[in-house]
Image 1 (cartoon, rainbow, N blue to C red):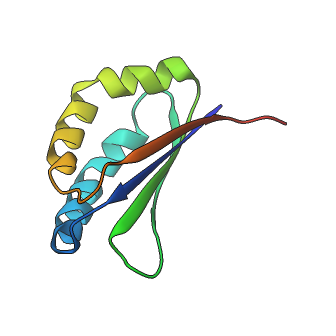
Image 2 (image 1 turned 180 degrees about the vertical axis):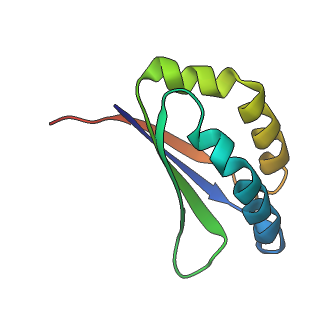
Length: 95
């Protein structure tokens, strides 16, 4: 299993736009082949740094998602809302 964490820092006035986008897309992302879990977390105290936390069956499943139109559409709409470069980690669960 692959754990994927993506840190995103938004312009404060753009957070609501992202939350609306995530609410519309989350069911499709969760239903994507190989995705077994998806959550959205908010960093305290500022409220404009958010993290996605997802589980994937394999690196291949995650890569297929990253190449899919669903990701391309979502990422294109999301990246214009950032106030800093996003950070992402793919972690392999051990034990």
